[in-house]
Image 1 (cartoon, one colour):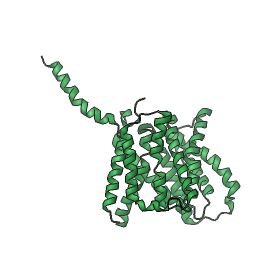
Image 2 (cartoon, helix red, strand yellow):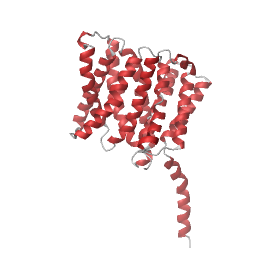
Image 3 (cartoon, rainbow, N blue to C red):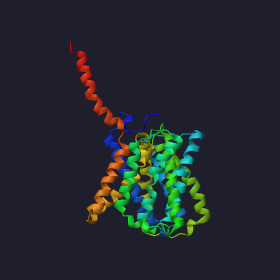
Image 4 (cartoon, rainbow, N blue to C red):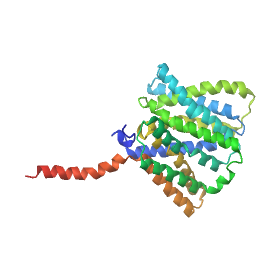
Length: 322
């Protein structure tokens, strides 16, 4: 199998794909804050039900405006349902529940295992794209950088809240599975699997919410409502479209690099807005994350092409010389 990456389609600009990866990292990085605020007055199950319902409705309106139709193929919808379970229903609910007690820094580190799990799943099971030593290097270095930025002291709380921490690990496994399973939607417009999987997610979560939480008895605060809207519009609807676009261009392992980029983006926002200080450890961590993401996302073919082009030109010139 050829490597899935930015070099796989000449129409894709590497700078554009990396910018989209940064955007996805920012949107999903902000989701932790939205969830933390939202579940204060909205139960996790109802919060996630509303999240998937609002996001899917928004995407359906945009698709109608763009003239894009959802598939009527039963096989495709079964795949949407599997993707929904792996990428929204199970992990969204687990993380929303776990964030009521788990430290945000520790949650980020536990959730940063997705690239490693995706790499192992691709290498050992699906083999739908090439797995290289360069990608493995990027995964290890990126994870090390994430730990340096957040600070290893957050690991001191590891095991204190065992069940919530295991819930986050299970959510991470689901995200890795979703990244691998997402290869089934490469022939579709990114909005189709995004909307289809969210519709399936809402179909699962809404009845459970009605049955368990009785949402008509809930009195959410304005902060929770705004958090829900921000999460649904930006960190779900928009983020899912970008996610499925990157699955086609960067591949499964490359797309999971956003798990590492979330942390330095948050740090840089703190430096710019809150004027926080950057220690040498954080700078080292940032360098590791950048190096790791580059190794995971930039195809080796780009570098090979740059090196071989001058040689080919020399050979061509020699052939023309009488």
